[in-house]
Length: 127
Image 1 (tube, rainbow, N blue to C red):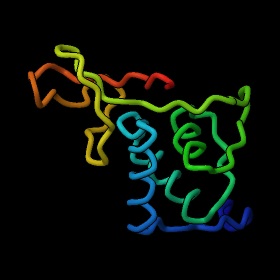
Image 2 (image 1 turned 45 degrees about the horizontal axis):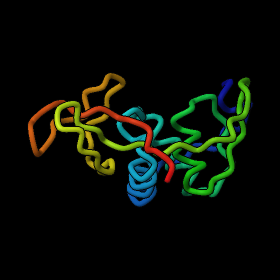
Image 3 (image 1 turned 180 degrees about the horizontal axis):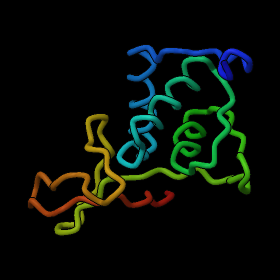
Image 4 (image 1 turned 180 degrees about the vertical axis):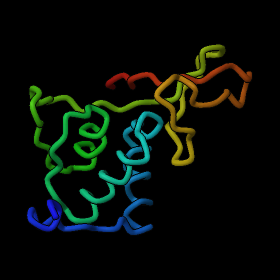
């Protein structure tokens, strides 16, 4: 009954919106640290061209890097948008974050194709 009284607008996330959300999050480098729910929220914000209200830094960063409007919910608004890259702990090679990267809150984002060492996420340097 409570759901009926607040008149929530239930939406399903379309596969096209999910694909776009993964592309956007991979381009900013935030995809490995976003949960399934985060990706769904990002997809809805992109698909509906809505203002995203969240405290989640990675979600804000991914949406802002795509030109989306973000409002902070209870925390100070950030002005910086960061880009992330995959960094090999062995040979030091850096690469863009692919759309099919494993997602994990830990640093487990894969192994280097060159030397087999673990990959981590590092903020890209400004050029």
